[in-house]
Length: 292
View 1 (spheres, rainbow, N blue to C red):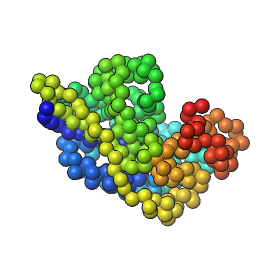
View 2 (view 1 turned 90 degrees about the vertical axis):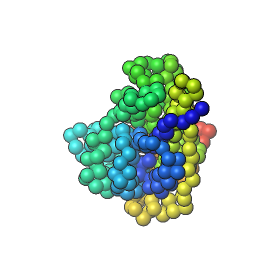
View 3 (view 1 turned 180 degrees about the vertical axis):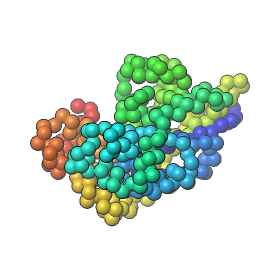
View 4 (view 1 turned 90 degrees about the horizontal axis):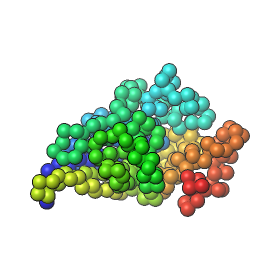
């Protein structure tokens, strides 16, 4: 068996420069032939401009994630109306305020999909979530029937996505669905930066993709001070603290809270401090609101 091509896939950086830098170093040691970004480059960590500058320097192509879409179009006629209320989404607005206009323009210009159809092996389709919707992902628990319907228009046998912040390798209806997890904010209980490598290998005349899931240790000791010193923690209040907790633990605190708050009464929506405290009283590891 011999390797004829190596690709790397990086997703869900979320403005976490230390995690991204460590990942870049690890990727360079793996000597891939090409590297692709699967979206959510910014938001939720303080180093958004620095991450965008490094992305520009590297020249790695990227699809558009839901956070890229929201930040790129915020305060424009194309922006999703749900995010206009600053008090409800303080970190999104802080990120928009801090991000250079040229970086916001780059986020707006990112494509929804990248098609790798002209490779010597099985074709790949890259996207952030599901076809046509970067706000929805595929998880280990997503029913196979739903995945079949969702990917019915996808002709490529390898579908590589992101969004869920969890590594994934599933076979459904003749398609292989892969997710390398999150670089900047994992949700699988492992706070290390995580990404995917695919090797195209040959065994006789057949060429197949072999996945390798990488985990990269980086220094988390200065994370809390960076959240403070940047002003993000003060601007984000309880939401910013949930984001910091997520980065430090590798657990899905911020997204689980977002899922939970949707079903709560208006009074809690109007008081995020009380809402977060109520959520923390009820939920956490082994009792996530996702699972209710």
